[in-house]
Every structure is written in C-alpha cells, then in structure tokens.
Image 1: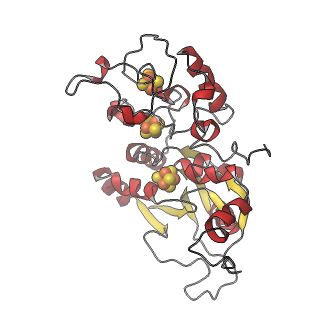
Image 2: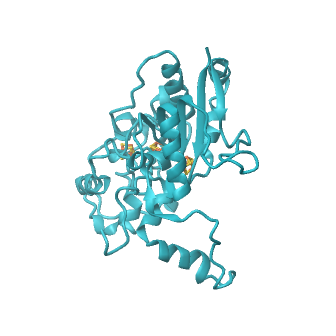
Image 3: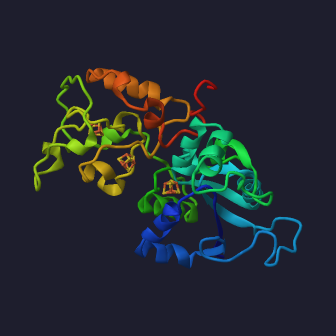
Length: 307
Ligand code: SF4
Ligand code: SF4
Ligand code: SF4
C-alpha cells in the first residue's frame, strides 16, 4: 500500500519545495511508493472546502507530513496543529521550519516595528492602509515548528538538500532510522588550517584566494584568510555523499544555513570563541546578533532591549 504524504508551507520562499523536485531521478522511485494527499504547491486543495463551506479545517490523514516555513501568523499555527493531528510522522523541512530561518530575523523587531516599516511609514502605501480584518493576525514572534507542535525529524538547510530529503524519505519508506550528521561543517571541510592568527575581518567582496583548477585541499581556510565563516558552529552534512560542504565547493564561506548542531547550544557564544582562536574580536562583526543567528533566530533573536 502506498505511503500517504501531506505537505504544507508557512512563512517560506518555496525553495524547500524546489528541493523536492531537485531530488531528480530517485524521486521517480519514491513516487512509486507514495500517494500525495495534500500539497498546496501542487494541488488546489482548500482547507475549508472548495467554496469555503466547511466549518472545520480538513487535511487528509497521512503517514508522513512535511512542513516548510516558520510560523508567522495564527493560521500557520492552526494548520501546524492540524497537520500534527493528521500525520503519523511530522518532519520540519528546511531551516525556516527547523530554526526559524530568514523569516525569524523579524524577531529583532516588534510586530509594530514591522507593520510600521511595511505599511505605515512607507511613502508608497496609504498611512491608514493596514491589512484588513480577514488577514490572520501575526503571532507575537516568528516560531520554529518544534516550538508549536511536536516534530519527529528535522531536515535543516536553506534550502534542505535534495540528497538529504531523498535519504530521509527512503529511510522512512524502508522503516529505517535516518540520522543527521553530528559533525560540524569544519569537520567536513577539506581546506587547509594553519592556525594563523589574524586581526581584522575582511569584506567578502574582496574575494578569497584560490587557484582555479587546483584541489580544494590546497586552499587555505577561509576564516584564516580573514572571512567570517560559520563552519565551526554549523551542523555538517550539506555536502551529501561528496562530503565537501556546498558553499566551500563554490569557494564561499559557510553562512550557517544548517543551523547549530543542537538547539541547546548558542551559536553566537560558540562562534565568538571560534573567532577568538584566530585572533578576531567579536566587536568586529557587524550586526553580530543577526549575522551569527541568521538561520536560527526563532528561539534566540528578540527586539533589542527585550531579550
Ligand atoms: S529554508 Fe530557505 S529555501 Fe527553505 S523555505 Fe526557508 S528560506 Fe526558503
Ligand atoms: S572555518 Fe570555514 S573554511 Fe575554515 S575549515 Fe571551517 S568551514 Fe572550512
Ligand atoms: S556550507 Fe554552510 S551555508 Fe553552505 S550549504 Fe552548507 S551549512 Fe549551508
């Protein structure tokens, strides 16, 4: 019998849904064993009936539920609760769902700050043109999915990698356990570390040194070259079977999109320690709080003065 799959999206950019398509050929094998029963990006399945005639929200029962995006309004919270009731296994898909992701940068301001910026204080909108009453109210802040409902598995990344998604779905179909990497991006990184001490952080536009065509193992660690790289405090695994982290493969620093290795650690505190080992003081990092929590702000970022 086919495994029933439901998918929902909240405060999201749909990049994680594109990752489902990016699975490529293995997706054909997965689809042979799966019946998609609910997926707003693919099917026009209304939550309250096709004409809004139902009083109760209706999401079909499913064996596996995937949710991308963070929780930004009361409708998201309501749908998350309904997905939890209807899905035997619930998976956070991508860093917005796992850790708040980019939408959780909004937690640096109050809801009023955000509404002022978007609707009241812009020259292109009517000062009284606030969203109407039919728009779901904002939650007090942006939440990661696990802060609202119990989650069985997280698949981090912005977006999550097709390889990881295929691995997790295949493991579920085979009744096996799927484990995330317990190593950091640095542990997977082949660049050379020479324990060089620096004094300043460079702007990324200056461009790291590398020799085109030469192996990555001949390139010097980007942090030791003076660029802020969040590899030391970020969960590894984005490189899939090749192991080399996605951004490092493109000669770019890790921005931390897989989030911290554990929700119990504070990447900002750990990163300040890692920077100290190469002689960089945390004060040099512009917009430090947001930069070091860029993808994990749901439980961490708060309006200045209200932490
Ligand atoms: S994790 Fe990234 S790609 Fe996925 S929905 Fe959020 S912003 Fe988009
Ligand atoms: S700091 Fe960045 S460049 Fe250096 S080893 Fe870690 S991941 Fe690689
Ligand atoms: S290297 Fe860092 S930012 Fe890039 S994909 Fe991997 S975890 Fe995300």
